[in-house]
Length: 314
Image (tube, rainbow, N blue to C red; front, side, top):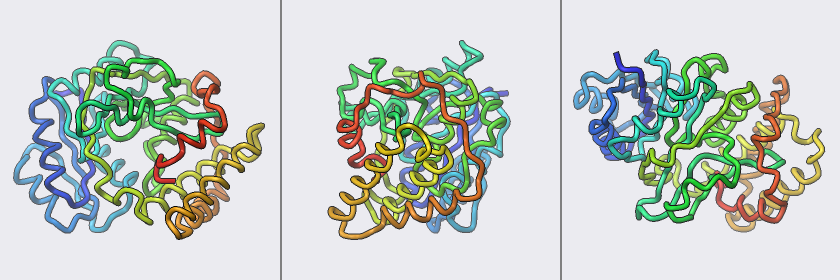
């Protein structure tokens, strides 16, 4: 019985899913394939079931958001280690072997960040997430040469959901992804909760995948920016960011980001998303803040503003 479950969420763009699964076929470790079709209209579920008959496939009639679809896929399995993979990722043959190694070697590690590289194969897309004092998330090492992937700065908070490994017992204890977040921010929230619960994280720079980009919602589309704004404000309220010492910096940062987005995009999608996210968190309990060592306190205000450009399309 394989000790690894690989959960893939698909929404149309079958050619991406096909490429992703074909790369998974070449893995050096055995695994269980779990696929959730998140309301596709191109026959993705049927085509996956036909091409990969051993896969466990669930089909949602409509798009319920990434978090719900991901939790649905995860629920199809029970292996000790869980790997989430976007359908727009093509991984190297030893990816699974490398990404679960930190989980196998240290019982206190609950999450592992892999190395996502850009399609040119020369630059880093991300190797996990970092966060500043306002709990703003940023992809680590983005745009840097792949030879710098092992650099320890900035601080690793945890993996991005693009392609990441988790200990299932920790995942189950925390209830998986928050399904109130339709897309953008749900992976960040999970790693914050894991760190707040006392779990360690690790990076696996030798677990390499090519990230082909944001195919589901389109880069900087109105919907993407609205979902990004929702997730940011929702988490700001859940973690009580406007009641912490960094409240003024948090509020000023958001004002600058929203105003800048409105000017560039000529709409209020980022603001509208934030209003909706703030309201959605109104009656929910506050969440514990992660320990100080999980946050990169060296990211200053100006640097954070620069980093926020384009991150989660906020």
